[in-house]
Image 1: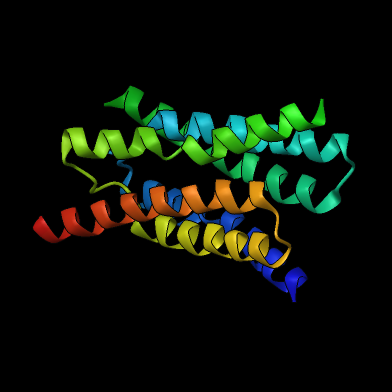
Image 2: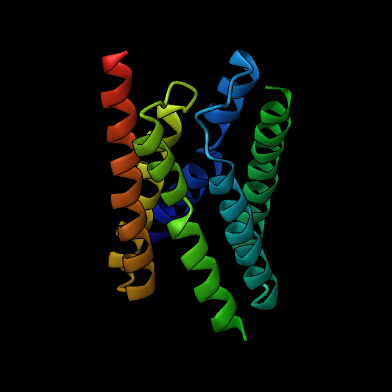
Length: 85
Length: 85
C-alpha cells in the first residue's frame, strides 16, 4: 500500500513540470513565469539527488535526477525567452 | 552530513513556489503559467503527505504538507486570474 502511494507521489511530482514546458514551447511566452522558482527547484531536486547518492537509494536518485533535468530544461526556456523579449 | 543535505533539499523544494506566488500577486498576470502543473504538483505532494502519514514520518508530512498549501494557493491564484481575463 505505502509503496504504491510512494511510487504514484514520485511520478506526479516528477512529471508536474511537463505541462509547463509544453505550454512554454507552444506559446513561446514565459513572461509571467518566475525563473527563480525553477532555480530553487533545480537546487532542491539536485540536493535530493545528492542525498540519494549518499544513501544509495535508487528511487530517490532516479525521480529527482529526472526532475532536475526537466526543471533545468524549463529554466533554460525561461532564461532564453526572457532574453529575446 | 546526509541529514544536512536532506534538510536543505526539503527546504529548497518546499519554498520554490514562493517567488512564483509573489510574482503573480505583484504583476496580477499568470497567463503564461500552466494551471495543470500546479494541479499535478498538488496531487503529488498530497500523495507524499499521505505516504508520510502511513509511515508516520514527520519530516515528510511537514515539508509536503506545507508544499501542498503553497501550491494550492498558487493554483487558486492561476484559476481566479485566468477567469478574470
